[in-house]
Every structure is written in structure tokens, then in C-alpha cells.
Length: 431
Image 1: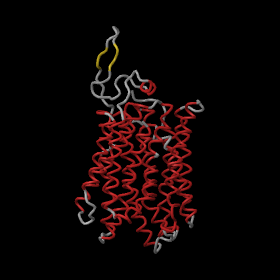
Image 2: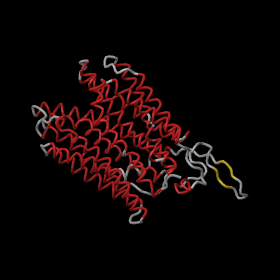
Image 3: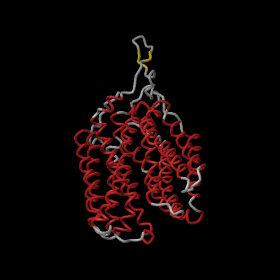
Image 4: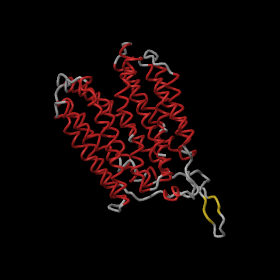
């Protein structure tokens, strides 16, 4: 199951990076201004934010396998059918909204599938392994797609992404299976009974005479939304994605305008932050499962330990980033920051399935909505901060111009780690 899901997260991030690359080239060639480019590039995240909670609900109702397939088919067809014409703004806005909405269903569906298949002592490694495909996809996209644009033009990126999406959909349709029933060892280990999806009339309760009856169960929305452990996850998801999206979108500008470096001359070294995320994400999962399996720490202590280490080290790297004035120093700090943030995912990002395995997709949807909003807020606010700094410091080449950009996510990491340390738990709190 893991090796069927990993390519899905990888392909998704290839699509996201690929659109940014292809659209930027096409828009620059057409003379589109920066404000209009920003509108198109940010449209995806609005659609993505809107479908997080509905995605978790749909995955609970009809199953993560089906929702994941429908999501891939929708965004792949959109990429294939919509022409990349920067002058047709309305069509591009609608297309990016559709792709955002479709991809918003993916991660809640993945968490639902994993929660139904994976027992507690394997969850850290499973989540880390499957989601690390995101970072590998981002690295691959940045490494290979600019060459494709140069050789075949921006439109070729859309077609290549659509082909990858369709290929994965075919393989998923052919080889993926529904969650195991209660007699399957995976289902028993994961803590599921006969009914794995909490529909209004699905759970069965045994009667004294050996028969069974259906007991209506509803999704506990109120309990989820007022739960402190859930909000600990939400806060940390917000911070993680704030830092990730700010670095993804503005680090190239920092290299070029802040450090006066050429991205082309930097070669493959600029991919190190994302490759580091891929590595540390998997290391975090392996370490967490080892600590839990060998009973070195409880689930609660393991989640808090890795989350705290990851976010505190990341905060130090982010606060130090504007001090370094060389490409090596900047790459080192950004790699440490993103790498240890990925390590922290073995804390907060797996905690959905600890506290609410039956509602993992919904809790994931709630927290990922916050993560997506963080991207919208962080990327937009960073632009405003830099515009103000450009006026105050007569350019963006001084470290003072960038201090607020990296200090905000740095202090957010410290705050979030404290919240998780105080309010999180590794115990199941939703039946």
C-alpha cells in the first residue's frame, strides 16, 4: 500500500512545481505583470483550502481509495484539456481552482487509507514514507522541468503532468484494494472492527444472544473542533506550512536579490533543502516507530520529543538564515530548517491517527486547511514585508531586509512546539 501511495504525493508536487515553472515562463513571454502572475499562482491554494474538510468527509463516507482515484482523474484531465495561455485569465483561474479543489482531497484520503490499514506501531514510518514523496517530487520538478520547458515549451509541462497523473490513476485502479475487514490482521492491529467508515448507520454492536444490531454513529464534529489535542495539531500544521511555503516561494528571490547570486550558477545545490526534507522525513518515521516498538518511550512522549526537536532546531536555522551572506551558508540553514521541520512531522503529522484513527481523514482535513491558509497568508505577507523593506533599506540586498521574513516562521516554530508539548497526546480520544 505504501509504495502505491508514495508516487501519488510525488506526482502532486511535480504538478505544483511544474505549473509555477511553466506559467512563469509563458507569462513573462506574454508580458504579464507581477500582480497578475501572483493572482494566478495563488488561485490553487484557495481551491485547495476549500476542499480539505470535504475531502476528509468524503473519504470517511465512500472510502479513501475511491476519493483518491477521483481526485487524480479530475486534476489530470484539467491539466490535459486547459491550454496554457496567460492572456486567458478567467480560464486559467477556473482551471487552477479545479486543480486545487481536486488535490485538496488527496491528503485526507491518504490519511484515511493509512489509518485503516496501518497498525499504531507502524504509523510514523508509514506517514513519513508516503508523504516524503512530496519533497522528492518538488526536487525532481525543479531539477528536470526547466529543461523540458526549454526543449518543448511551457505547454509540454501540462501534458507531461497529465500523463503522470493518468498513469498513476490506472495503476491505482488496477492494484489498490479496499481496507481490510475486521478478520484481517492489519484491521485488528489498527483497532478497527467490522465497520471502518463511520457512516450514520454502520457500526455494529454485539448482542447477548450472539447476534448483532446496527448502532447509529455520527461524526463528532463538535468534539473534534473543541479538542485541545486537535488544535495542537492544527497550530503545528499551520507553522510547518507557513515556513515551507515561504521558503519554497521566496528562497529563490533571497538568493538572487538578497545574496546577488544566480540560480543557474548554483546548479543542483539549490535542491538540497528538498532532498533533506525527503531524508529527514523518513528518518523521523523510522526513529519514532523504533522508540514506540521497543517501548523506549510511550506514543505521547515520542510524538512530543520528535516534534519539539524538529521545530526548535528549525527555528534556530530560520533565525540564523539572514545572517549568512554566502550560497553555502544559506543552503545549509535552509536545508537544516526544512530537514528538521520534516523530522517534526513524525510528531504532529502522525498524531491524527493516534487520537482519532476512525476520523483521521477529517482531522487531517481540518489541520491541513490551516496549513493551506498559512501558505496563502505567509506568501502574501512576505511580499508585503519585502516591498516595505525595499523602500526602507533602498533594496533587498541587506540582511535587515530579510530579517522579518525568516524571523516570523522561526518564532512560530518555538510557539508551536510549546503548544504541542503542553496539549498533545498519543492516546486515542475519539471512539
